[in-house]
Length: 115
Image 1 (cartoon, one colour):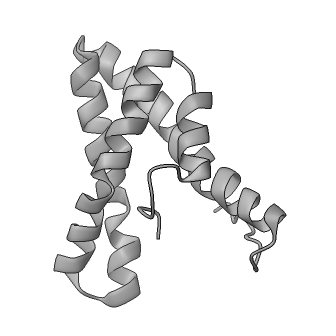
Image 2: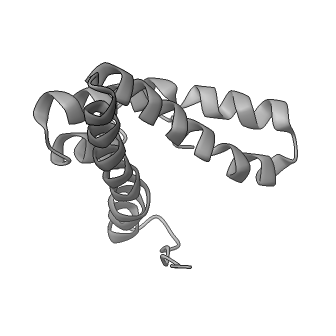
Image 3: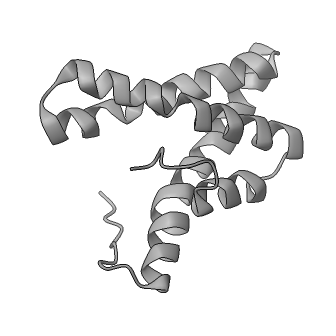
């Protein structure tokens, strides 16, 4: 098991570390691999985009369930991240790059969906 250290506090380096390295990089690396592979396997990149988004959203459910021990709320939290997943998937597909969705996720341009 790999443990990624997180930085405490609100300093600028801590914000960059948590925003880009801990949160965004892992998600976008997962997305670029799975979205492209599933799209190629299914011969339908839209379906690869959709399935990758659903897999990632549901992978977050156990973490949220562990936070509050309420399955309904954990599933609703998974649904809550679908819009940013759709945007990231679109950026990944349209640019064929990890850079653009990484910048959107890391800077949290679309709002407080990561809180």
